[in-house]
Amino acid sequence: MAPRPYIVGNWKMNGMRSMLGEARAIDRAAQRLMKVEVALAPPFTLIHAVHREVEQIGVGAQDCHAGEDGPHTGDISATMVADAGAKFVILGHSERRQDHGETNELVRAKADAALGAGMRVILCCGEEESVRDGGTAEAFVLNQLRKSLPQMQSEADEIADRLTVAYEPIWAIGTGRTPTVAEVEAMHGAIRTLLIELYGETAGSDVRILYGGSVKPDNAAELMAAKNVGGALVGGASLTAESFLGIVLAT
Ligand code: PEP
Picture (cartoon, rainbow, N blue to C red):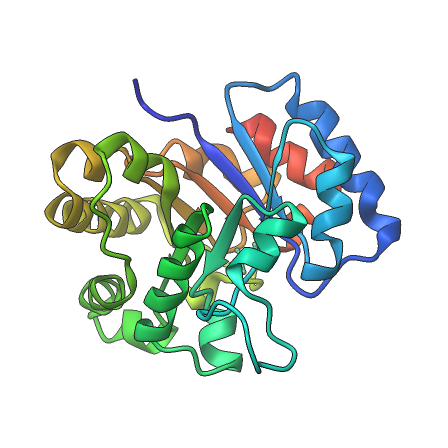
């Protein structure tokens, strides 16, 4: 059976305790919309609070350190976010790669740490506009994934459950611009082929590939219906229950 579509909200560096009501409203609606798996990644400071407020939706982190513990001032390990209630971690987001110089190798090390701590991983990839304009977007993204995806020896169903890929063209993030459905299908098809090569036919076919970049209630239905799109990673439109649930309902 094909896995359920997965809609994940990434609150980025937004969210005070006053936003817990949005998480509660999303959770209440998700209890009635069981055909879609819904999750939120609030900032570290709200993980525990959101985890305590919700029953149905998954709660995750937006990053973790690759090490176990020790002298890393300001960093937070995978076991620490898991202890706070996180069930998944978003890794390799373009904003982490750009703002913090995260390399593919570091992203892989973080993915290994998150999986080792018993969490699921959403691993992000995506090209700059100049790369797309130069006609090498597919090669760029596949190279990024080859170098940052974790090596997993688990059973196929466990790989498909614990690993999700998010394709997020950088030029579409927060800009209101999106690729065409044909462009999304071409990239997701290429990622699917790579996943099958790396993890085998069964697992590689079932790992969900999310699309991210300016997903809104009014474009969600078209994007979510595209071939090999298994859901969405949503930034700006996940900050209110109204717009986020508009996307969930359109899926
Ligand atoms: C993101 O950064 O993960 C994202 C998809 O942002 P937005 O939806 O705001 O484009």
